[in-house]
Length: 318
Image 1 (cartoon, rainbow, N blue to C red):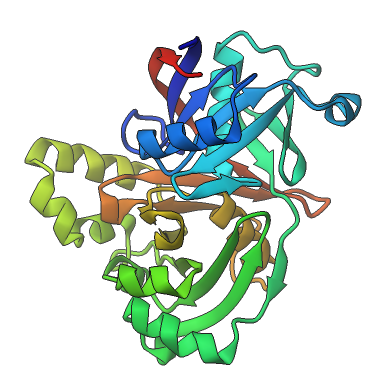
Image 2 (cartoon, one colour; image 1 turned 60 degrees about the vertical axis):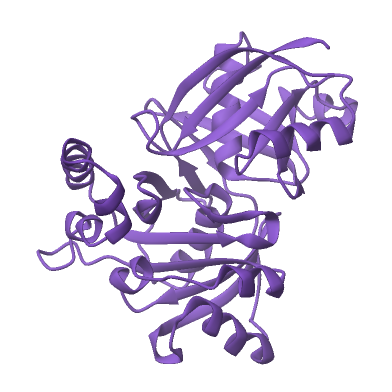
């Protein structure tokens, strides 16, 4: 077995173990598709990535490296938290970008640009294709989610590489209290994203939403709860998000960059969200992910987040 440099990075958090981890193999050269997929199944993380030299065309177009992204259930053309986490691992592993403050990643959707924006890296959201959820699928999905039709403010199928069937719900409390039928969602064959705007007033603060989570209260000790609540209160959020991906082998993803990227493009375009906001995700899993959304003057949506390296060393892989 060959030993390859490896890092595990927590993404969309400034504190280790509160975000969404990604496993990064810093040299994927020579590995077969089956070897990559087998390792991704073994890590049992939502995504595992492999850094490779860019293709000749990618190099000619300015790519710094190529990234392949695997879930336990298959390969993805693009994903957000692996993009940010792999960039952090690549830089710390000695990678040098062609342009100061800019990284160009080649992946299944083409080239993805990352920029260092005041110390926080952000990626340019790929274009999102939108279409309506078919009427015959709507009732099935709402039943699986445990949501009433009158609780849905808007819905859309969003595709920026990964495809998400998305619902904007009436309140953050509705999103937090969801207890979906994951088997039914798996049978549907689609990944489902849900979101709701947050009232940052006294009755709807993120702090109170975090306190309302029964599972978090049951499995988190008092000191951890206090820190979680203090951290959540210190960084208010504007959108509550959850992502259900049983169809890809992950019941619920802690913090999802691709989903937040496509949600931002949809919701900003429809003026349901401002051009600059913070999404929170992961509270139902006792995480506190924060996704920073910004639309620039050209209309480009940027998705940023903090990253923390939690594990580094070598992995035996051939």
